[in-house]
Length: 399
Ligand SMILES: Nc1ncnc2c1ncn2[C@@H]1O[C@H](COP(=O)(O)OP(=O)(O)O)[C@@H](O)[C@H]1O
Ligand SMILES: [Mg+2]
Image 1: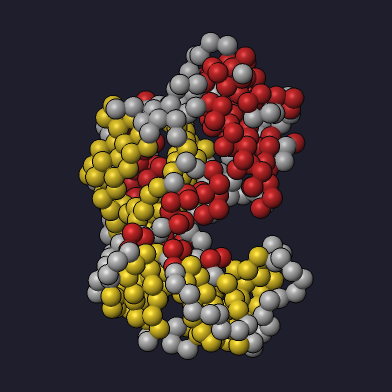
Image 2: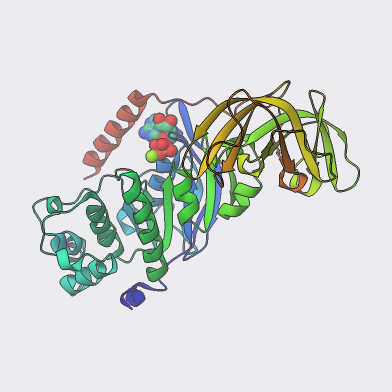
């Protein structure tokens, strides 16, 4: 196997109590993270939440304000960037246009005086299935192929840790999906530790063993994709990773295995072992695909929540499924995804309908419904420019 030469090179990454403050702005707030060797880890969050800053800290391009960074158990917080066993693949591939694909991949090895750079570059290109194009120039390749060259160039160094900063962001949707699968299989082959940063939830879920959802500089929840999707702990996770119907109200009974929440007079049952809180004001939720739409009131049954009657206020067809918005008095719009098993909608715009779901599918969040956001977001790029300039000046002064 081509990948064998790369195997067993992955290392654990550990971030301990990391804070990163830029002048006037906190980008990372008390970040703790442990990524086991050989895993494919995704850091998922909206633009500006601190993903790139986290990667830059790991790569040694930024210093944390406080906290420690360990790679393979070794504290690298004060180790210079080029001495860390880390490589980064950025969104812009930054290939050298005047060099062949092969030379682009061999370049780093040559510069570091590593033996057999050409042989190793061919091996890395085989891994990304581009060896047959080794003699071409980057501009003679498609976007997806250029991305694979960038990956080969990073992997050829056999870093213990590969950082990927939205590497598929420039590709169109179809190519992106294809590259996601390829990246995943390359990671399986080489056994390196991948830390992949993305704002695309589907991408994170498709590729990673573990996903950490980041919001405003902190990790809200971390786990296997199915776990996060099934049991989101916060409203942010419930809505950033897929969509959710959320309702807030007081718990009015919590005897037995489920609790009952009063949502403006409507009683909704939620399993207690799927709820973070069991008393007071709580926010509960259910995923849209777990709901069924009925044109007649369903018979009352144990273990089923029924809402309605309500009105269909929107029907949008998306191929595999149809999305319905149902307005139920006092509850606001409820989103339902219904798989298209029959031709035509199961309920028309304006129709009177009921919505139901199995109690077991609900979840209860940890959020205190009265909580204010942690700290304000700030996208003032002037401070970034100032800091970058100061860093450059400091580096020139040093050299
Ligand atoms: N050098 C800097 N100076 C000041 N603020 C910065 C600097 N770098 C990043 N930030 C801010 O930190 C936040 C996180 O940025 P970043 O890590 O690039 O987010 P992401 O990659 O998740 O989109 C943003 O609000 C950004 O404006
Ligand atoms: Mg970024």
